[in-house]
Length: 466
Image 1 (cartoon, rainbow, N blue to C red):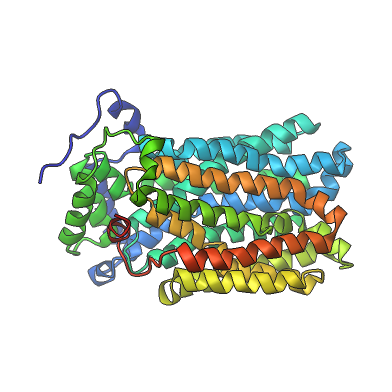
Image 2 (spheres, one colour):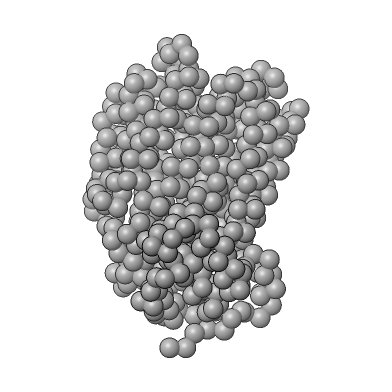
């Protein structure tokens, strides 16, 4: 079977700073061998992959820190900069606006310079954005910083789950994919926790740390083998896969599957919106967009962004401490999901999660039930929509379709974040009734249309839509 040319004319040089060639991988393999231990451990084909996942997980930690930052800082920022509640709500929502722009660009950036290159690019505006917030003397720097953060987060939110899905062996893909959302919840919890002890400017400076560690970390992990295969980089593709699976592992079957999948498309083929009418394209795209829309329309961002205010309205005296409790509960529940997702399957957890959210939202006026909503969200709707999006989109439309799905998620995150405070002022009960109806519809959506992807290779999943 013939394989495509190494690089497209005029593009190779631009990609080189972000790629590591076969010789680099072999050097990394020798280093990894001495660091990771015995060949038996490497034959388990998980150690190298887990190390890669832990490095890229710094991106979602940044994502979560951005999401959690507005809750513990609301009162202090309003007081120090003289903002109104509406102006602060705008500040909170601007990360979603920036993320929408990042989502639009994310697919093309990830396709053009690779998954690692796009994460490097995403880290830079995040760092600049946090610095702008920390030095803000008025709302303009505050807003600019939030937009820059959001742009970086928009790229991260697409690229990390795709990278993890493309490097993970099929028996671990669900658990490792859940690490993305687990890292988001860790970032949220850290923002809540540190917000109890440091003032908002210092908290913004601390927000720089995940990305400053991520950038050098990316130099020590391989590029996605599926992306390398798609770009025709045969030697790098096979060496990257060998590093990920272990030096003694037989990768011939997986290599042939990936080659067969990639050979069915051509790198120079342009996918138009008109092509999405084919079932193999529109159905997975509909499922991906639907899940990521419903993930936001259940109101979770409104709860997480303004949880301190919600607890105060509920009469909880130590609202910031209660907010941290929500963050800790979310981490624990998401950690349970990483263990369950490859055992129970995606669809079952989504149905259980949506059902639990529907019940808890019926009685969400009390803070105890607010925590119940966060638990049930974390069990399925938090992590699994991103996992399924990264699994079901065909490789030749992943950039375009992934951008559309990610954009829809961030658009509705912005809608919920902008309207949450206003809706809560209108009617707390009415607000959560709306969110409850969305959660109830999610049960129907998952039952009727979401496929089970547990235990199937990415290529098998994509062939099933033909």
